[in-house]
Amino acid sequence: MAGNQTFTMIKPTAVRKNFTGAIIKMINEAGFEIRALKLVRLSRDQAASFYAVHEGKPFYDSLIEFMSLGPIVAMILEKENAVEAFRNFIGATNPENAAEGTIRKLYGTDLQQNAVHGSDSDENAVIESDFFFSKMERF
Ligand code: ATP
Ligand code: MG
Image (cartoon, rainbow, N blue to C red; front, top):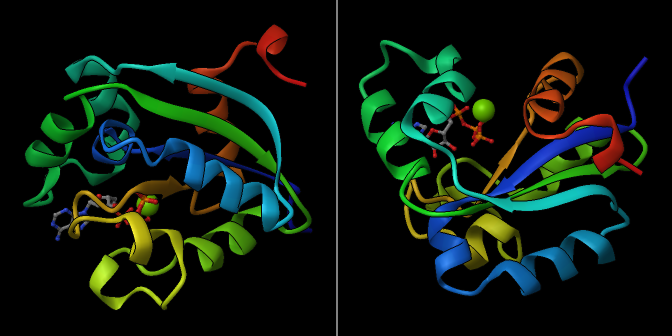
């Protein structure tokens, strides 16, 4: 059965460009409820650990560098079938290919700086949420 929570980050470029408010507004209006939220900067080691699944890929080092450049906004979101619903909602990985009106189309810069992250499975949603949030930071 599909879970009802997913994890997302607003990536450093989108935070720096002050897109945080607009992105959160879209997320809420699409029916996702915020269960946890924080502004935090990842160290290189933390970014490497978060994206360990991509280790060895050509874009890995650059992704680690980028994700530790500045603060990100981390959130746990709740909605029915959250993981799939959120990935459909944010658009394709490459903003150029993302559907009109999606967060990645509107606020992404390029394939790497694509505005937001979305968990790719219920299992990873739990792992990623636990990476950022303690029990007392969740509602
Ligand atoms: P995310 O995991 O951030 O939600 P995704 O699941 O759509 O994105 P992944 O394949 O998991 O895509 O890639 C993780 C992230 O790595 C992408 O969001 C993007 O920032 C970056 N990335 C992926 N492929 C490339 C690439 N070929 N060149 C540069 N960066 C890339
Ligand atoms: Mg992914």
